[in-house]
Length: 165
Image (cartoon, rainbow, N blue to C red; front, top):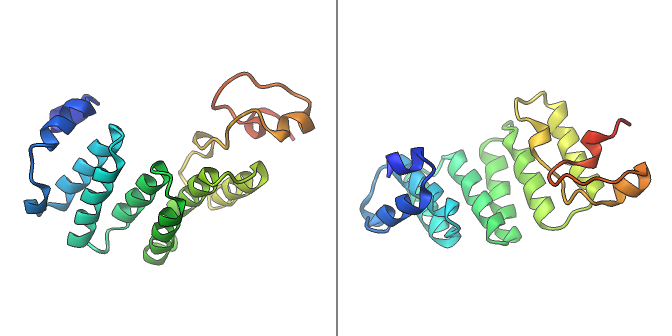
């Protein structure tokens, strides 16, 4: 599995992962890796189940909670994602990834551009090493375009980062 994931061949890694009885695995890192593999091939429920096993074996693992929130978002379960977000904030109140989770949950819930930009600005104020430009409030065709009187044709490029205020 390691060699396949190193090559980003998650489909082949998932085929190997399917042959393993994950209930018998005690190694938390192996469980997290399996969760990542299943997430990357779009098998979110299996990813969540394995990450929950990892969490049961290591209940203080903030990154496990973070991953569970990400998977819940991808499954379209924002309520579950918010529960994981709250738990993440309780475990790691000073971790800047809480802003990324809040942003992703808000985006999945269809928050307006101002709300998303507000979260990104909070993150930026923390002087985090997280690259704010990597988080895109998309879609790029927003009400901001009308206010700035511009047209954007590049997917993934936010109006706010392209237009000087």
